[in-house]
Amino acid sequence: MTMQQTVASQKSFTGYQKFVVFVLAITQFTVVLDFMVMSPLGDIMMKTMHLSPSMFGVAVSAYAFSAGASGILTAGFADRFDRKKLLLFFYSGFIAGTIFCGLAHTYVALVTARIITGLFGGVIGSISMAIITDLFSLQLRGRVMGFVQMGFGASQVLGIPISLYLANLWGWEAPFWMVAVLGMLVVSAIYAKLRPVADHLKERHQVNPLQHLWSTVKKRDYRIAFTSTAMLAVGGFMMMPFGSAFAINNLGVTQQDLPLLFMVSGVCSLIFMPLIGRFSDRFDKFSLFAIASVWMVTVAVFYTNMSVSPLWFVMVMNVLLMIGIMSRMVPSTALVSAVPDVPDRGAFMSINASLQQVAGGIAATIAGMIVVQKNTNSPLEHYNTVAYIVTLITFISIFLMYRVNRLVRKKMKASNPAEALTLPEA
Image 1 (spheres, rainbow, N blue to C red):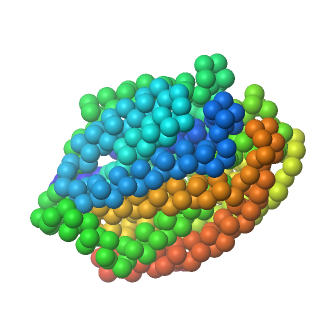
Image 2 (cartoon, helix red, strand yellow; image 1 turned 30 degrees about the vertical axis):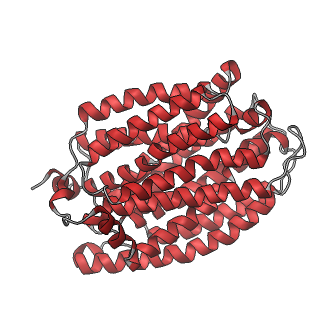
Image 3 (cartoon, rainbow, N blue to C red; image 1 turned 180 degrees about the horizontal axis):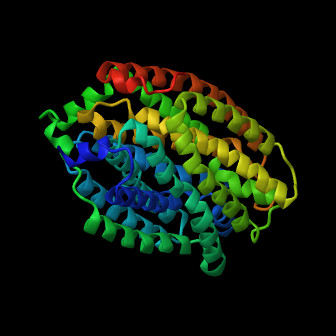
């Protein structure tokens, strides 16, 4: 029995499994922090570098577009190598790109550095997803996703507040240096402790990488999952880039209170993520996703129409919004991960991540064109319009995820009727 099969057949986590979950969670933490920190640094960067909302939107989307292009280019090769080696290669490139971000002192240099970082960082999530899918059964995957996605919450609890503190001391470049140093420690742990993940090489077909890419894209079931992921990304990315600027300029949050705002939201994410993972494994994933989607857009519309408010109330609304976002992320990721066949997982995850990044880049660019700020200290205008668009896109996402859910149930019944009986009914 292979190591992957042994891991997948277990119902509880072994010591090595816990290490895999931990190292992927820390990897997720650094990659997410590198991307997410752009939003809380947005107000500082826009004022320091004299950037308009549209220029800042381009700086954010530069990472996403390059990450999407990188994923497409690597998709055909993703199933031809040991996933550990792929992770090491792209994570090392991500660290180098982050260092370049810390060295950037002009708008052009910043955009160029974000492009380099995206070329490498954008593929890491898909590689991690392929590793998780190879090593854990669908029944355990929700819990694994919950713990790995805790990197998102941890980036807010620790990463973003510390990043903002460092930025206030030494400038907005400091957080990128912090991520680079932490990344060097993580890549050392991956190299020393992570075992090869290469059993998929025994099952793949010996085809040309471009043929493999095309064969993955042309499968109808895969395209349904790809479309669902793209719509999710559009809905998620549109509001994100201007979150801190809206809090400071519209809601009256001070630059000194901003770390506390992100920390409170992050702590709640760390508390709720494992619970959401367990709920995702125990109950119907699609139902959880649909309920969370309605929750999220309801809070988002209310939040974006707020004016100057007490800090405690802004914190409460941020926590409610974060719960909705996290409760969508875990079940949708688990469902989509069950769509590809074993020989196609690497290519599928790469294409899926690419579409997610490209769609997110388009969303950030469009949001930058919608949101208006008369000067660097005036309130943002039309941010609520972005929330209305997100609401429409979210309901389209619910329909698409319903189709993905049907595909997964059909596949589970065809491949393992006994296991399919354990899945909750929608």
